[in-house]
Image (cartoon, rainbow, N blue to C red):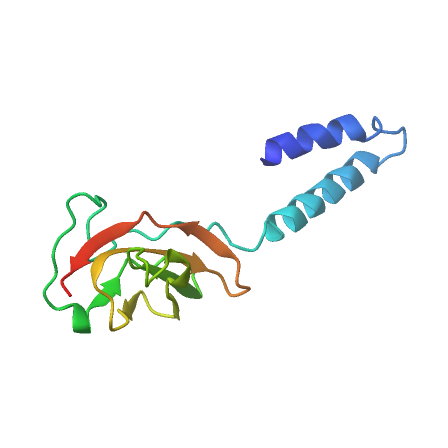
Length: 148
């Protein structure tokens, strides 16, 4: 990314002048611009998608059946640079429940207690946010089944 930026700057900047020190001044200005651009890269600091999600399976066709859904904790590996995490728990759609009503939970830890009252096939995923609230990419989705 930096190399592409420098190449664009070389095309935009005038050729070095005959004044001594002009090349050094342009180099310093370019370095300052690179530093400013890298510190203003959207603020996520390169947050990655959380991994190591448990419980569950990536397959909705063969999710594990869990017996203790009333006191279940969802967990994942901490993401470097994360300030907090947003977890979305999606119960299956039905005439009385809609996917739009999926609970969203925010936590500062790499785990969260599952809300009570969920049953059936449950899908969940998580993403990390930095201190400014900028979200990193979502994790892969996990599925499990809670008997009613």
